[in-house]
Length: 348
Image 1 (cartoon, one colour):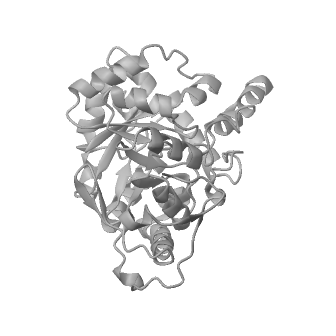
Image 2: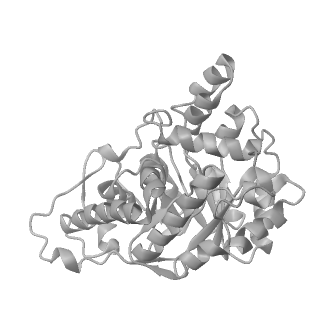
């Protein structure tokens, strides 16, 4: 069967993100500026550290989210299958990639009730682009995205930069905030707002919360650059030059996370964007994240097998646990109060 243009675009995205160096942001996410004060007398056993937390009232064994990712039809189905099985085994949350293709009649890419059957007891997060809410059936698309997965929440992803540098992108974002507010009033599950790699400023975060959004995924700069991805897809030198100028655009993740937490101390926050290991996850939690998301970092494992995904996150969890041990933190609440060394960013 011939692929739709949208499905082909998603497949192109997957190829580019998997290619070494092609999709990497030119921005430092900021983790290297943050250093924990080492505790040489932790006075605890490593195995007694409790990484448990919750999302949307559902218990998690660790503060991790498999962040949204997608691809071409056949590969994406395998990816989603492996990720769902791994998330269930690990007791962590999972967000799916954009459901636009499947909702508008394209291949389902594994985004069906079968995914929920693979992961019956974890938070499963549906996903739709903010620009799609402006369509005549935008609110209906959102409901269907949730219903098709029996999802616990809906991620609305914000990607104006990507759309602006993409030749076929959605360039009219007038009224998007109003549509998000309308959605939060009628949807039966919470709405999560997520950037895709350029960050959410405190001003935008506050506007989203005022519109009824319950959780913000800051998704700052420092991981995948969608401007770089679209530059690789460009069919003309001019389009490529336009996109490449924005490879270092955005708010670095650590800076973004710290600013939003200071501005909105009570809102649920997810940190993603250039989180490469468990030590960086620990730093994100110390700066105010409730959960830490990773996407591109686990993509290659997700193409391989469920077991490869589990092995990947086992390493992340071991690193996170050791960061707790070496800061004298028995749990995540204590990690959020762990002492930092100057002169890096200092949370309140």
